Length: 314
Image 1 (tube, helix red, strand yellow):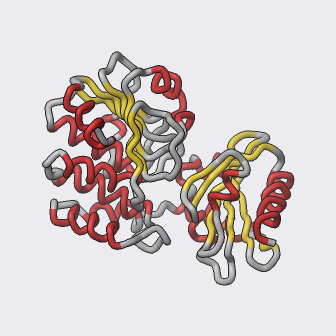
Image 2 (cartoon, one colour):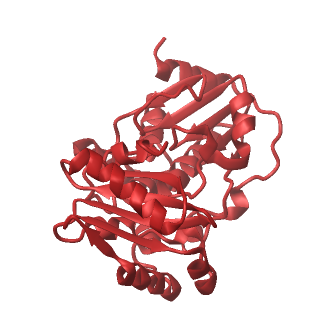
């Protein structure tokens, strides 16, 4: 029995299901989780969603915090989306790890045996994996589900311009449009609504930007910056902007996590691997978009990053 048949059997026999996605969410984490939640509910399942995070505006115009559950119960099946690391679901990690009937639906390469059954497709987004699963059940997503999944695809591909976009990406997006996805609502939410505070942070990022070896760009955001402007790290999504700079092949946005730790959002262009760099620090992700955490002061973290990058590419 292949993994899809196993997954469909697990879903078919389960009456109660818990769905999880990762902290420091992006709209693919939300899109895949909310899309699956809404679809399973339509099939008569008792479903609850868990996110160890708070969804911020303007994302709440699509993804409502009120639909998230806080209190864990007993479930026949637990499903994790858009991550290959259990720890990334935060305070729910132990619960998921100890459950005997688990399913992972993801697009990040690498099998880490974090679930009983794992489906990992070479798609641009986890939301496409959910669409594929729905269609393998012989079903079509509702307009609401299609909107959730379309948000996931457009977010993870930065409006279909990232290197992992291929013919399947466009095919899946077209299907969702034909299923009634509210593309205007998605685009207004994700790409056309910016707060003044977040744009001030963006300005700081570029003021602090430093280049190394002519083709490496590194900048940073401190906790006190976020406090000053009333933002959290989920609202700081400018890592892609750094790699789009002319002549830059590798970039990193350092986001202070605590006094002595930085979250590193790494990006790269063709011929360079952000994931290779992230994996050196215990992180991972996509070939050209990955992340990790590094302990130390900002200057020490920068030195550690440059040492690894230069080891691989200089």
